[in-house]
Length: 266
Image (cartoon, rainbow, N blue to C red; front, side, top):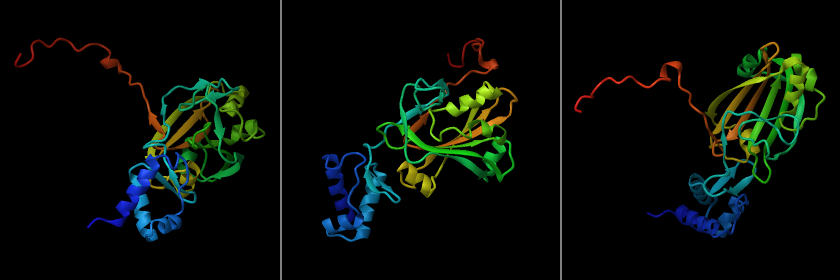
């Protein structure tokens, strides 16, 4: 038997494809759609869930139902190159172009906080529960939806260097200050993994909670004493980024294979 929710999904799909709702536009509430289509709320909810799996909609916790940018939002490759920020003194990390202007979404925070995450604490070289300087921002290219959540944990021995800086300076400017205080050049390592977002992360990135995120943990090491000075966690919606890595040959793979003579059957 044909289900009513499939009919409703088809009608909403047609309206999206006809341009009635532009990308990022909010749809009416489930109750309003149920009244419009003379259906119950659960039936409309099933239709919305289907369109979400097809890539037409986002059902975002606390923000309603939004139209996606086609089947995928604007995406950026993430390579391995750290560049000087051409907009101001500082650095642009992979995913951000040195010439591209990124903006902040919501409030930026820079304040002391307990670092209770044992994984991050170990990477930073402190005991869990240590008070460190925490910098929090949600950023992304201008005119786009939020791209990433940035949370930086700064080691107590360098926290005073950047404690009085604006919570939202130019990209990487606070790292420049740490380097100038005797830690040049900072080197970085990244650890990538996929996971599901928390409800708060999904709301900040304007994504549903069932869309995986890419978690990138960056460890910055001092060029002076060779110890960690900062750990930054980036959280990016998985449909916004793809990682790009250049593979290098090991020493034992630098030369061509020796000619072993004719192959069997030749």
